[in-house]
Length: 96
Image (tube, rainbow, N blue to C red; front, top):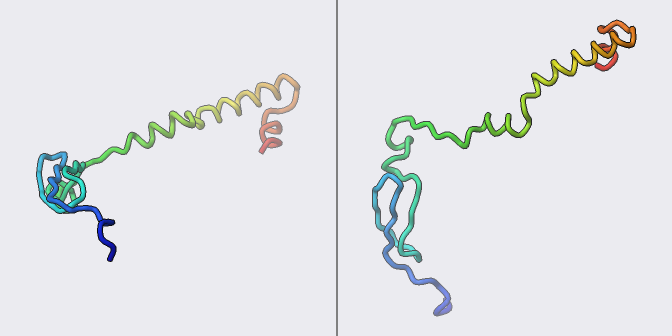
């Protein structure tokens, strides 16, 4: 093994968001983590809801409420067909 190419390991303090501190060997002096075995639902047996930035809200913000626009588009086609004199059902069926 070559000498001098490996990092130096030293005791490191690992701090969780819940406040628990643990020591381990690492090349970094202090490590901050969001979740540990003391507060993780798998180890505690308690369920904790973790919202991942509102997935449904992000989808609606990105694509809008397309179901409402679909109804409006169908009504617009019926109105245009009525103005032209064609039955509305035939105009909608022709588009589908």
